[in-house]
Length: 156
Image 1 (cartoon, rainbow, N blue to C red):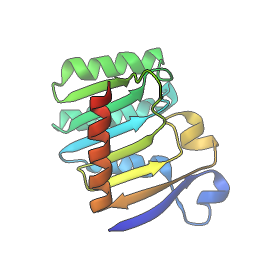
Image 2: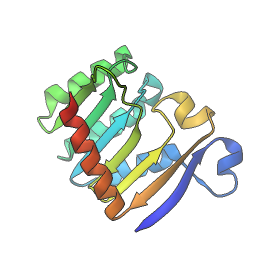
Image 3: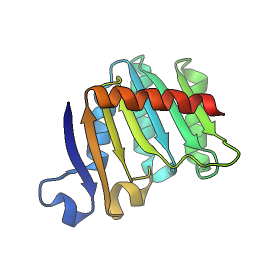
Image 4: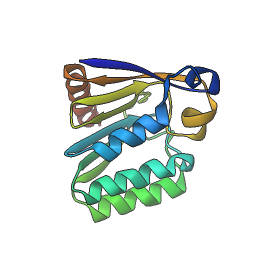
């Protein structure tokens, strides 16, 4: 098991802490079988991450994206996600619609072996301008997070 602290904000990353966004890019690019993402906010400022997911889908990587239905309404993102779902049968987008609760998670799991868990939304603020902290976890804890995301898919 490996755990590494990640962050955003110049004062956090200048001391050697790796940035959240570059690590997200790295794990998506290295995905071989599966990517699971649960996120509260996804805006067009994170469009390049959707492009990386499209590249992964072209490689045959299974992708599940769970979005909080109340906060992910960016038109450009919606069009890109619709394209991915229509173009690749192994891509699914789930709009989390629990009647009493919101999905507030910010989690990525790749190949059930690597997970990024943190406070950063997939937005300009979350990736660049805010001060955010997260962890990169490898090993069995990532598998456990993947199982939780599997359960979230069934709540709707």
